[in-house]
Image (cartoon, rainbow, N blue to C red; front, side, top):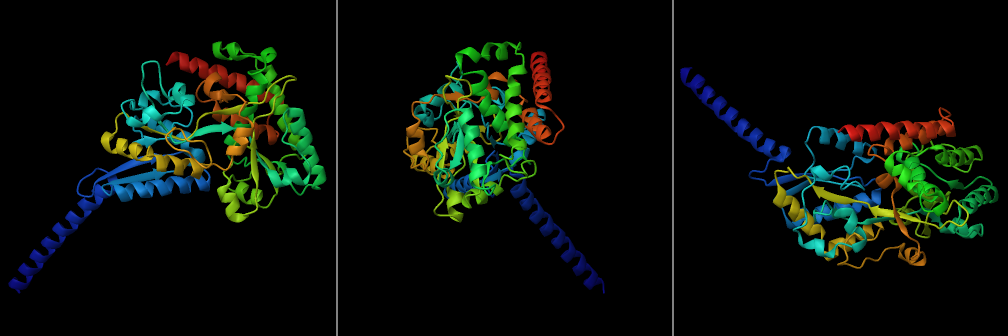
Length: 427
């Protein structure tokens, strides 16, 4: 009996030791702390549509295959990205790699590693140099692609109703009304996935440029920059958005529609226009005969010019305090290879951020057609304090839900603008 008990104790002890060793190995893997199985880099990106995510996942897979000791723990938080990153900034616990999505210097600058010593910097598109490089030569992030936004339109729909891409806002409104009438309401003239506040933020932000900046008789740039801007002229935009709702020129479910629905509706020719640029790939998977076009933002004032809205789109910055700077740089260097630059540009249907590759982009003929149109920076990135994107978008939701009038929207913008400017001044 004693011999049996002694054997049982020894077996139990060995089992505990083995279990403990097994748990320890597992902990290294999940915590990304390195060790026997290499390093795990956390990565956060703002990509939201399925085509962009597939392109990113494909490239990450190729990287991990080439560098089996480095794992990329990627995250696509969509509408939660900004709130999650703000929490991480406050805790000074940033992802190893993260998307600066238009704020490489102003919002994220103090958290980013200087990448100026990397070889790819020599191939940075000159149009992006001012955005990513400061006066001291610091390079804040790696550009996966660059934005050139306006409106995406369903070419089949416009052709069916004999509509040319509008040059002015008045022509845009006429086009929306024509589509509604000619289709007997079967086609949504302008579609919003408004369950996400950014859908309305995109509308306000893009049209703010021709309304408030680019026409010499209506240039409020100095007042916006020095904090003295009177927000009354902004009321034009919520007035027009509300008018679109009242005339049923936007989808009836604009406040509850999900962004992912856009792809299927475009493939079914149920949408005429959407804000910004929508990749064609996912649409053509559902309908090989789908045809989309892109156009600059229409001019608002008489005598005004159309504008592309652009600059920084998807990027990767390296957290300056990452435990794995060399591994993170290895990932960036992998992305900067010409074949990967091309793959990501084509996969996201946007111009590349580097000049070392030529990408076959579906929308390139449209960019060529409007090659004389100036690319203006996103309004909020230049003229608004950090933090305005959320109230700008929620104001659109509140407007269409009846909680705010157009005048209330401008008042809310003024209040948030002043509050955030004062907050910046006190930091």
